Image (cartoon, rainbow, N blue to C red; front, side, top):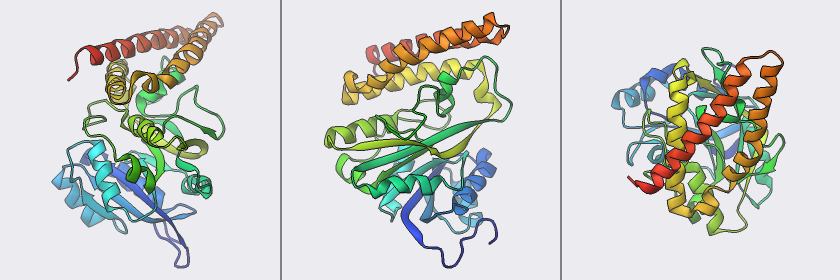
Length: 316
């Protein structure tokens, strides 16, 4: 079987994989993302590529991406609108989402689908491993890998219930969107603006609609997420932390601070202190970059809190 092709007798799962793209600068990333889905051990019913208000990229993808459905974002520019467009065009009962700068492990879809044998499961996400294109900065703490859209220290190490899934690697039953609605416009990334949390708001909203809603994290369902040098800089780290706080303020406004910050409180009180102490301990054992990691944790937390307060006080 050639790369990117399905065997003729391979039965497809009732799953639609949705990949959103907005810039031609990530063209090769997009091609490799689509190929990684085509080469899954378990075949998806369809692959949908949503182009976010970029006619040139839409034309290129329509002509050069074979075996996929290419559509244009029919809602407001941004990741939320693009995902909603993908949902509207999808035929599967299960909707899988992956970023265009990620590549899926061949068993990714298999592991996600396994959990949907239980009718009580509303959504499943998986591990997102950073692929540092310019090398990982020694000061960058694993506790803050969410800054680059990846799984971070403090997340479950085995299959476990979670409050929300992470956008680069997540899936839902169609029923979730029918009952709770789609991704909120006005929350989430638009172009290179480093905001997010639209998936957090959706999962909380779905849980409010149905107390039985269950979201699972399975670290076996893994993707690799590219991290360019520009996102491994201190400037991006600081900007992203502040933007995360602003995004959390939007979520709190939509669903209430208690639910919006429940996981964050546990993370702040349990995970981050261990990270600070680990960095100091590493420094005392000769790894001076441990002090950099400690400083990044403290500074990142402070900027996220400032961003949150700014978002609550000055609603845009």
